[in-house]
Length: 457
Image 1 (tube, rainbow, N blue to C red):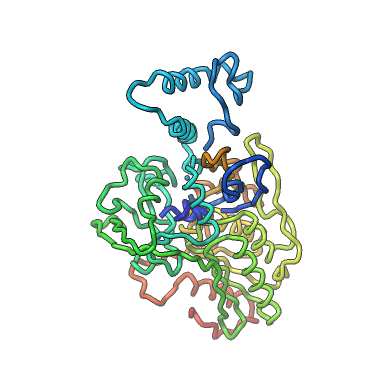
Image 2: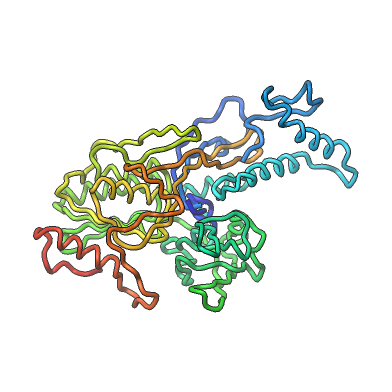
């Protein structure tokens, strides 16, 4: 999942993925605090995340120093030889370095960070205590920044993500958050951020770039944008508190079509979608447009609940762990719009990632919906968020792949829409060719939808 602006959802300026990132940027499952652990309760939540977004731990528990053969707690006996160089290096630094006082916490954090960077996975990373705290705040849907989901992408287009920014690894806007300062300033999906406050982003990680863009409410940041290979230009944006409104509902065609736009996948979003779908069906609406464009992802639990509003039974997605075991996540019972006579169209674009792709793929594979729009982003992995002992920060780690109900892995590929709709760059404001095509699909699907169905509102 692209990184959400506070992460990461996802996250998801670092989105948010989503939201926190965002990507970024995702799904969270709270885990009760472990007895005996110290630090803020917020830091003892473990979160399973899909999104839009790019971290770790050297050991899963604390360790003490001493002679390699006698006191290396946390090192499995079978791996003592493998870890010997690490302990030798650590003792050399902490006992013999003559250039000044050694901050052991920073040394340990650096080692942890280096281990996760060695994975070469932009969705796995180490987070300091403050970064971890801010990331969890971002997942709650409220944070300070400009409100944009960002991700990395190779300049040659051969891959959708990379690690260290530079000429071959670009910082790309997945989507501005609806109503955010970024959106109001004119930031668009696909924009490439080439500089922040006049400083190049070369050499930075995705998180470091996000941290430079984020900042306190009321402060300004200038980002330099390259759009469609044109000359770069500056946008100065005033940061604000971003409160994400994740679900927007409105009726089309005199109440015969219910339009539901979902911009994130928190548990609150799943509640709102369930209420909206139930109310629409009770009001006699039998046609739905589910708009997931620009959605960087969110909780996998939310994706399951939202898809279950339209799918009565069967797998919503599969998770494949490091050992290759595949376990299905089944549709929940009680969905209000599972009747096959209820027609559904899902809108996607290149900003649709992670959990939003789970929902779109589930409805496509099950035959419950047609996908209309552009190829989606293509993030098919699941991350876990976990704190470390003694307020030492935390990490997010890719722990599984997710597969569609038909066991397709869309990572770095994305979902192909059933009806592809290209949106010209000069599309007039207030028009929506993708929504127009979706309404046309619904109009043609049955005579129950009047021929005078409006093209868009």
